[in-house]
Image (cartoon, helix red, strand yellow):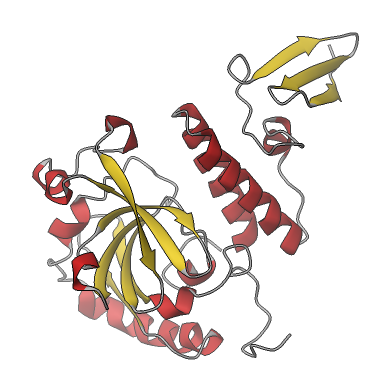
Length: 169
Length: 92
């Protein structure tokens, strides 16, 4: 059970490069960084200051140790997140800055859509609401997974568990 | 490998990275979360995880930085900065 678009809502989110694509608060849209802390209702994203600097660098490093980062807490509900997952999801070298460049190149969407449809069925069945669509950037081993924040509303340690659809224990 | 086991492995790496960068509190958070995931899913923790974390204060141990490692007769004693001591045997 590797980290795939299907397992992402149940998998570890800490450390993943993430982008806020939609939010109730417009000022949060476009935030880009790594998830560092997850709570039941929020994700804390470590972004670089200023956020544009990372894109100018072309996704090179801009990591925590340069002292130019800050941690922004984003509520899960009311936000839509786009996670960038690689084949080796624990690969921390992949700069999250590449996400913005590759996000608009999506020629491989059609070949991916059939698997997305099938996976949408079982992914959505485990938690009723929320939509998941997936895109795979061509040529790179990076897949962008868009997840509605309401699907992630759970205690961090309990998201992995599969105890059916019912909210009752 | 199950999702939970992979989560523990990822959290182990994150904790080590955070400790290396000197962010002990964040490393603690990852260690605690990994312990909680293991507990909820009835999994054991990997041996390297057990040996590099403090049972008492959940710190990620970096020998020489926040942990002392001494070899005694037939066993290793690791002392965390919080004073907790862990022992495990070794074969020569």
